[in-house]
Every structure is written in C-alpha cells, then in structure tokens.
Amino acid sequence: MWQKIADAEGLREAIRQQPEMMADLQLVAELGLPQGCIAAGYIRNFVWDVLHGYTVRTPLHDVDVLYYDPLCLDEEAEKTYDARLRERNPRLNWSAKNQARMHLRNGVAPYLSVEDAMKRWPETATAVGARIDAAGEVEIIAPLGLADLLSLQVRQGPYFHDDAVFRQRVNSKAWFSRWPRLVLVEKEERERCDTSHMRGSGNIIRF
Image: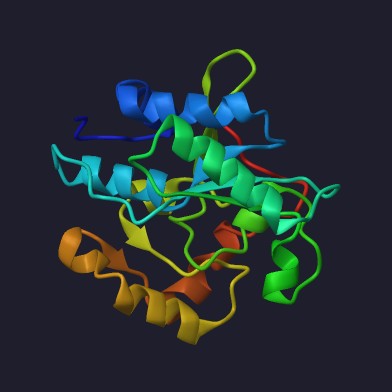
C-alpha cells in the first residue's frame, strides 16, 4: 500500500492501485445513479491507513453510496440499490442514500447536489468521495478540498454548527487510537482557519 498521498492525483493513483476499490467503484458506476459515488469513511479511512503505513485496510462498518435524484425520494429505492450491490459484493455493508431527500431527515433546506450535501457534513476529512466517470477514470469529489484529509487533521466542517455532535463523533469513533498521527483542530483554531474552507454552493471542487 502507498505510504504517501500528497494531492488529488496521488489519491487517484492510490485508488487505482487497489483492485478491490476499483471493483467497488465500478459496481456503483454500473448502477447509473445520478451523481453516484462512494464517500465518507470508505475514502477517509483508506487515506488515513495509507498515511500511517498500514498494509491492511481498516475494516469498514458500512460503505456510503451517495446519489442525487430529486424525482424519486422513496427510501425503498435506496434499499433496492443496497440489495443490488450486496448481490454483486456481499462482503460489504452497502448503504445507499439519496442526498435529494437527506434534508428531510436533517430538518434543513433541500440540498442542491451530492457535493452540496457533503460540504455540510461534520468533518472536512469525511467530505470526500470517489467515482468512476464516463471515461473510466477515477474522479475525486471534495467540496471542502483535500488539505485536511491529506494532512491528517480532524476539523469541524465550516457549514456544520453543532459543536456537541462533532465532539461526540470524535470521541465515539476511536479514530485517534486507530490512527495516532491524527491531529484534532480545536475550535479556536478552526474559527481562525475556516475562511479558507468556505466556498459558495456553485464553487465545487472536483479532481
């Protein structure tokens, strides 16, 4: 496994070197989901494993598959996609979520896209995904950039304002025992630095 990922191209190449990850991304691509990608811990944990020099990937609780379909907000559709993915790869706990309906669960205004939903997640390092594009290339989706993920910083997202939930997640997930080089960015430092992460909804970073 790679021991250094310095930028988006390095992340793409690291993923390309993992046959299982490429197979998983291809499975999602074959579903034809609008804006479909695999995100969150699937990518975050892989990067943290690589940057810690681990040769065995950290086991995943689930695999977050995101898509955006405002014309079908039925939760049963998500379960259908989960079942189709499990048929092809039963070793993973697939969890498809239509980001066009997640605002209903979160009690906020509708999200505009997968990226718009991701940028409102609790941690910047979690708001990263990947997909196989129409040309068969790995595409990275990172609406808040890659800097925190690649520098092992755990920072509260600039659009996520529930400090207690952020802290509870950090405390409950045992990230710092599994990946001891992680650095928690405290609130005072976050407030000084968050302007570098703020982006308008139309300014989405893709690599």
